[in-house]
Amino acid sequence: MSAVDPVSGQPPAPWYRPVSLADALSARARWRKDIVAIAGCTDLMVGWNAGARRLPPVLDLSALAELRSIEAGPDSVTIGATASCASIARHPVIAGRLPMLVASARQTGSVAIQNRATLGGNIMNASPAADNPPVLLAYGARLTLASVRGIRTIDYASFHAGYKRTLAEGDELLVSVTVPFPAERVTAYYRKVGTRRAQAISKIAMAALIERDDGAGPAVVRNASFGFASVGPVPLPAPSLSRSLRGLPLSGIDRAQVERALAADLAPLDDIRSTAAYRRSVAVNLVLAAIDAAREAAPRG
Amino acid sequence: MIPAPDLAFTLNGRTVSTVDGSIGAPSMRLLDLLRLHAGQTGTKEGCGEGECGACAVLVDGELVNSCLVPVGQLHGCTVTSIEGLPRVDPLVTAFARAGAAQCGICTPGMVLAARALLDRVPQPTLDDVREALAGNLCRCTGYARIYTAVLDAATDAGPGKAGGR
Image (cartoon, rainbow over all chains, first blue to last red; front, top):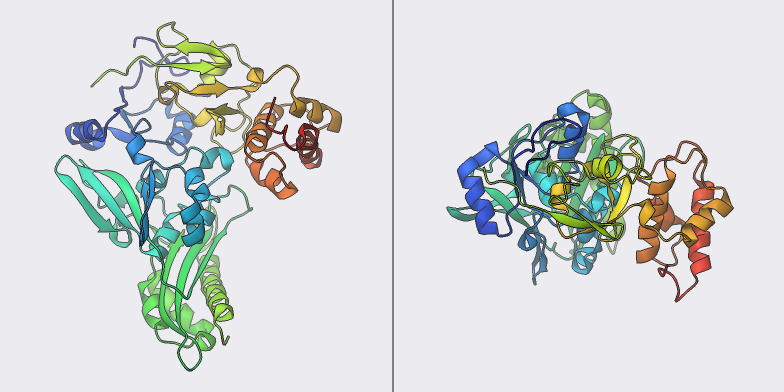
């Protein structure tokens, strides 16, 4: 192709659009991170529009049907890395078993964004404010990465190594995300807090999955898992909070306790969207709201 | 580096391709192809970052922001911009009747967002309309007349006929 881009006047960026995963992995192995994997482009093109006006060499994954599929099994659903937020939100099994993922997919920008934005892009872009990662953390998702060397799976909770850094190797592509179905007697609570309901980048978001034990006495927390956005350099689980809640009666958890546990888990900053103090305070409120929801769902309150 | 392949797609019923020269670099924005090369200036550029919906078009019937779509991804797709709607479209008629347009910059994106909604949900609720149009910003009308227009168009189409054009 010899045409020149009309806006930038630059020659075309090298653009590779394989039609098989094997070819995509070969390209990844050859050029490693010198070639940028793209799919929905809802983030990448914002930078293009903001002034770069040319793309780095591109590995376009949008022609790979095998990366778009969503497969429901008996215990989990496996979502291809380039499945769109819209296709996730519309999927009947995800709607039935993983309601928080429907909620986060439907709050990932507007309809026009959801039609293009991919789950894999939301993960690999590695923004601490990304909308779907808190939900994936709370549900205990696993990632499948592929390279010419083979495939491996990794707990999503350990995937983010630091701000915009992940444990993906230079020759690897994220191919799918497996989300296990939660146990029974769980309460799922997801809330994104932004400046307005539609399309804002979150000030903070939280997903909680609280599993009850409805024994003879008052309902207690059997297990609680969380995911937070915009309160640290990466999407964060809250292991201290999870540990501190285990075994506690749902009706006996106080604010100070949650505050103490979260102090160890979160590392919010002051930035253009909010302040650290606001984020800490809202994080506690969201956890208490999730606990309230779990208590209300328990048979004996 | 492997060169980008030739690509071709359908725009408002006619074929555009790298072979006939109407598509340049694969990184070219669909928005630029529409406005600068294809003469389809009904699509507007607002924010250029996917927030405002002024540049929204349909790709294979799904609403997208054309400022965020590199043409290199469109091989084999069907793109419909506002010029690709029928000359007499119930939505356009309803927008005119309700006074749902003022300066007009947002209108093409609004109409296409509404088209995408009605094709999927022929009889939407007000909440459906609000959600479907949440990514299309209007600074003139205050939205009420736009919502009225979309609901009217759905009523006009009627059960069984909805989605037909």
